Image (cartoon, rainbow, N blue to C red; front, top):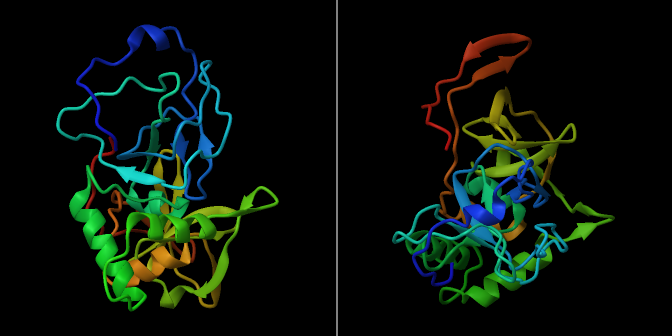
Length: 240
């Protein structure tokens, strides 16, 4: 997050817009338009033109996951020639997409991420931001327009990691899989045996396994097991 002056949202420029902006991020890093809001914010450079249309997937290698509020700063959305404001359901989604914690507005999380990154790779010191960004840039690549996944056993994945299953995005957490939708996590199934197609970059998975704890926005959901429905014992929270 860069320094911003205090200013009111640019309501006049967006007045009369009859569609949601295409600035919500999926776990695969795709940018979609949806009326649903997120609980985290971030950027990857200037992606839009003066007509609010996206013209690129990213501009810079530094993909950040930021706090929605920081020191009272306010940004008009999608100003010309300024970075494109992106939104995520939660940090697990941001990490799966290939982002990492912002060093300014989420300084404590950034330091924790660096510590876990160093531990996972047996580094003698915490890595610089550029070193992390270079690794992540190579691990969030596309092949034929789709994010590249890699196989791993679900039983070996830490909580907070995303996989692709039945062409949908699922969060691994507390022994279950939670299906992601733009509106939030909609249901839970038990984890299955065997390998899964992992979406979260390998280096980020290693950092999570080494102790980093991503923020996950899980409401209380019904659990679907063998066609039966039972209540999942997960504390609910309000979706922003």
